Length: 118
Image (cartoon, rainbow, N blue to C red; front, top):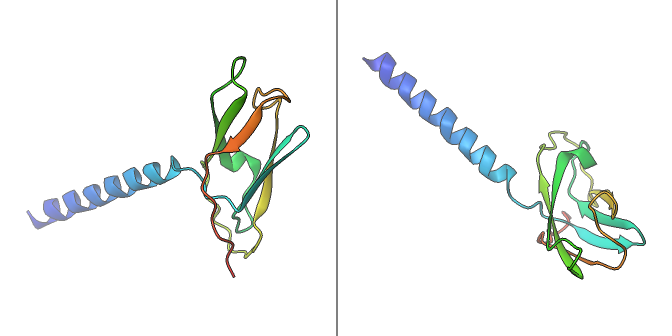
């Protein structure tokens, strides 16, 4: 009977861990900065050395043709498990074409800004 109880607790712990990880994966990534230059939309994000563009999904709200402004949310889908320290993080660059945006659309980030580590 004790073994069954231990097994149930282990399964419950694994499920809770997976649910927590999934919930965290759906959260907007805190950003260190944001800017647009010509055709580029640039997010400055925290990195330990393994963060790449493929680490993220992008969600665009208020898509054209009628919208003059859109909101972009950057969501991390792959954790950065490297151990490096990069105070300024790294830049993740998307083109307007990749996101289906024309040059006359104003872009706003939905992500909250994180402070850079000292």
